[in-house]
Length: 159
Image (tube, rainbow, N blue to C red):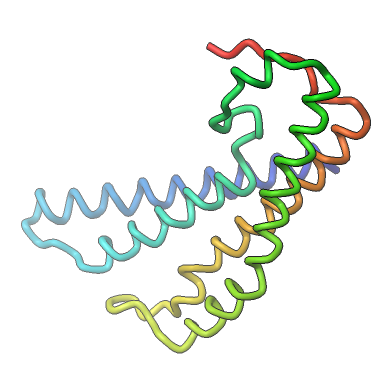
């Protein structure tokens, strides 16, 4: 099940990026090939960029690939790493959990407004932010669970 979820998240992220790339190519060809800029391509590219970045941060990029400060992590013992991991993930996951209701209210409220060219409700433009917050909560809970089992507490050498 976990492997299927990872593949689905990667496929969705890759599909979004592929669509973004296609819109970008259409934009370049229309602007420089035919000297006819298409307004919808600018708007679609911005919306897709927001989706790609937030979806990747929420579901695609593994935790080990995120920016970390491991100087302190590598200099302390396993017990201190356990505490650091739990406290850090409680802070990130807790803050994300607290932000979900207000963020959802705002995203839902923005359904009333549409984008200027395509008319897409802003709810659909900003929805990936709520997905990012949910992803942060789930990742934090999973990291705390694995830390309590003694996993992921080894020192890391990053280059």
